[in-house]
Image: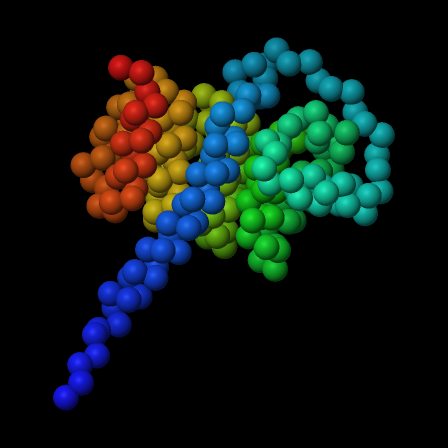
Length: 214
């Protein structure tokens, strides 16, 4: 009698491959966001408000945004997005929240929210993080974007993500907090490590700890 191996391990292996592929994509985005300069954060309080650009037709703004998002290898720069004005946030949020948009485009749209000239951007990123309708990859991108935009002010917002339901978000939060550095980041990562059961997330926590100077 022939023997068929159980399907559960195969499904688990397929899930692991998909998860690791998603994590690779997130790590690539992390490299762009976490190694680039933060235009906001601690320096935002002394930053002079930019001159408001002339309003542009919505269709024109959307076309320019789509062209900028076609450069996934490029770090989103405030200088590129400032001419589009605060209306760019509305378009980026629509792209990030649209389930019919390609997932890479959605994550790049979230990354760009980190640098748009709109005071509501930080709050909108938080909204993407807590929405149950947001895919894990987009929430992971929002974790990174929030860190870049708010700097150390994002620390209390990111710390609870170490216990998030999503493995991808937990891993991203661990590396993001590690990049922030400091004694508090070390403390929360070390406290979380014994409770984390997923190997890949444990590795992300250890990687985050390796970023922090002794």
